[in-house]
Length: 114
Image 1: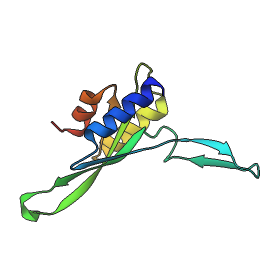
Image 2: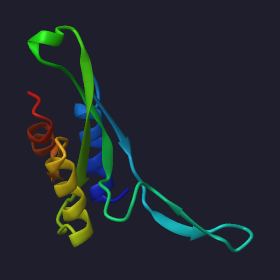
Image 3: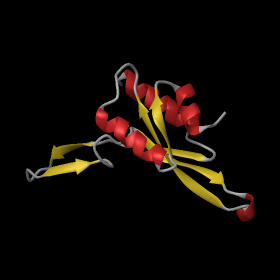
């Protein structure tokens, strides 16, 4: 297991409970047995871990909950690509929670959890 995969698993286990759910988002493409190209994952540049954080909304809707889309790009030493930065920017500008995490502390900061 690569160091980045190890960090991803640690983050997912540390923050993916309670009001946060994160899922591994593998992206890429491969040829199937018939020679057809099969693409998988959300989109080019989408983050390694995606999911949601459930929050309770404004006082006039007490008790109602919504799921806020969340995306964490995990890096151990590497740099993000332009596509990864664009994906993160789209999510944050749309009201979601997104960013780059190199450890559990970064992931908790992105998700605004203790």
